[in-house]
Image (tube, rainbow, N blue to C red; front, side):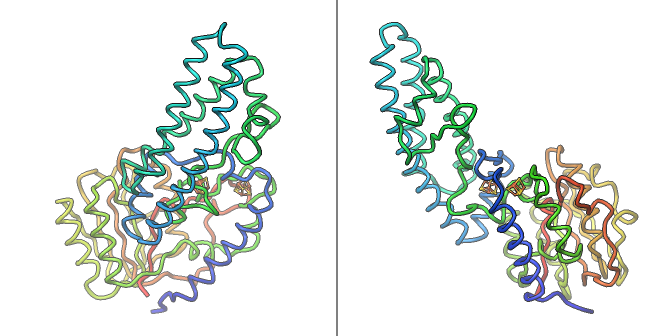
Length: 365
Ligand code: SF4
Ligand code: SF4
């Protein structure tokens, strides 16, 4: 049995990251600078990442405090602009002035929340999502005055997020972007899966420069047996909706049974299927993922899985994403079969995205 090693995974991950740094670093469409992709499901994943990693937790808290300070600077710029607009148009437009002041008050409340109260818990991360609405409301209130949005970048100043674009004030960068992404292990699928709008873009470069197996390996997280079980316990303690389907490679002995016990304790019903020593053919052996019952976990233990099978499963999970809950699916493969050299038919430079973030890939090393 050829086990995955930390080095092998590290090399693939570093290669993917260097392509992202190079291609996204020089892209004028830079995705992170065009507002946030984070939705409520992603906020839950971010909260889970913070529970699982003290580093992510500390980075999130520090990063969002910094963002709070930046938004307060923006607020000063908005206030300067609002004062001028009120002086010039206030007498004729009292309702517009009231709407603008109310929008600025909401902005202030959000700054207070980020700077003083924010904790990386699900409810606070979900509250962060209101900022898109807070910003849109403030800009709309500015637009209610003649030239209001046009003067904002000048009056607010260059050290604010209000920069002039061709169609009014440009979008602000993602709230979770502070010297890079604050939630690298829990990015929204849209960020992690490269919904790349550049041409040629990230998907072309990745497919040209990496092998399919390398790309799959770059999504694997190395862990120890104890670390994996601890993380699983934490995830299950958060609740069923936090569970993400997993493929665990290289777990030995009774790890599948130990994980099945944890699932049973947390979720009640667990079905186990052992394909002793056999290769898992996802297309043939797995039931229709979309129809997996919400109240039953499925644990499969097989001898091997290959990158095509993992990719096939990820594609199925993307298709099932509309469902309220992700399937409670846990696959243990003794090894990742790296002999086939075959590629999944959807691994192509013409595709807009790659789906691997829809499941957790873990290697016990
Ligand atoms: S994913 Fe594509 S569009 Fe987005 S920053 Fe990277 S290269 Fe640009
Ligand atoms: S979540 Fe992270 S990767 Fe996605 S747009 Fe925000 S900063 Fe960028």
